[in-house]
Structures are given as structure tokens and as C-alpha cells.
Image 1 (cartoon, rainbow, N blue to C red):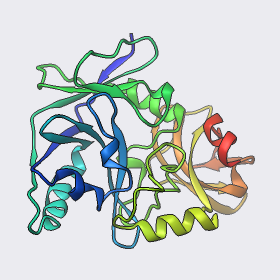
Image 2 (image 1 turned 180 degrees about the vertical axis):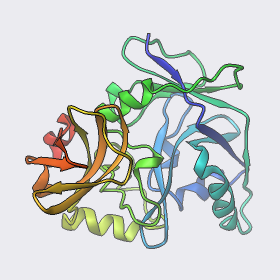
Image 3 (image 1 turned 90 degrees about the vertical axis):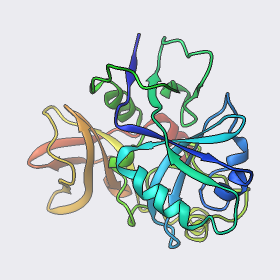
Length: 265
């Protein structure tokens, strides 16, 4: 059954009487929708509306748990803490670990919720640290083929949430009210100003390193992000989606996911 420990993920705990209203004014999704059975995926932005971090929000009786990438935890604790002011909120790291499962892998009865981005994504669970957390590429292969971004795919202080498909992957609430960076996010959405998006790409050869430029003839039209073997994710301009591309001299093809074709093609 396809399950994977995700040792690069960390869990932050947000406690205190004001924890929900505190996060509600800072992140892109509706924190009030998080329950023990329902996780929420959200972005944390600069005041100018550029990506800083993303995480899944799990809810327990007395705390919210943020499932985020290990490279973002210290920054999140520091930046979120600056906004506490007089709010009754505490933010701290935990020793909980994260596991993912999909396809026919049964979801644990407790401390787990479906991945809110896509039904095919499976579920995420958290629990005490385990002795063996061997890193494999299994989960990355799964998410890359589905077109699901990870922290490595978004460029801090540069990427827009809509470029990383947060709008189609249920990472933004359009009704909850203001949050930091909301103005640019809403303007980009309502004016249809998304010139590039993160798409799955594939080649007949292993892909080059992250950051490699993607070319259409002699013109750069995108940038490769994370990859495993012959499959990867890349930011691509719209005019290049149906073209034969090259990356480091290798032929490359974009694969527009069905969930994006149906809503945005």
C-alpha cells in the first residue's frame, strides 16, 4: 500500500484563546474550516502578496497544528510571532511527524485528514516521532505527477499563489475577508492576470537540476522546479503549454492536469 513518511515536514503548534482569529487575518484560507476530520491548505504571504510559506492546518480541541516544510519552520515562528501583539497566542515547534498515504492505503482513524487539494492526493496524518523515517522518492513522484506543489517549487518573495495553482487546489478562500497579501491575490484572480502556472512536465531522460531554464526555440518560457527521474514540475508561460520544449538540450513536454483543463484551459 502506498504510504510514505515525510521526514522533511515539521509540525508547529498554535495555542491560545485567539489562535483562530489570529491566523485568520494572516493566511490565504479559512482557518475556521479546519476540524479534526478536515485539514485546510493555505499560503502565508508578504504584504505585497508574494509567497513566503505554505502549510496544512489541522485542528484539535485546544490547538491548531501547522504541517509545513522544515526549511520554513524557523521563519514561520519568527514572523508569525511578530503579529501576536496582545493576542493570546503561542507558537512552538513540536516533535510530531507527518505521514502521507494514497490510492488503497487506509487512512488512520485519528489524527488524519484527506489532503484538501485533490481527492487523488490521498491523506495526511501526524503523530509521535518514529524511529525509522527513511526518505524515499515515492511521495514526490506521486505529488509531481498530480501537479501538487511543495515548498521547493515556490520561490519566496516572488511566486504568486495563483501561479502555484492555489486557486484550483483549494488553497484560497475568496469569501473569508482580508488577510496579509490578499489585495494582489484577489486582483490577479478577478482580472485574469496569471501569465504562467506550475505544470507537470516529462521527458524521456532524467531531468536537470532545479532552476534550469525551459526554452521554446531560442526563447525562455519557463523554469524547472522539483523533479524525480523523468517527471517534474515547472513554471511555464501559457503560450508554451502545447509546444515541444527543451531543457538543458532535452525535449520536454508539459502535461496539463485534468483539474486545470476543466477550470482554466
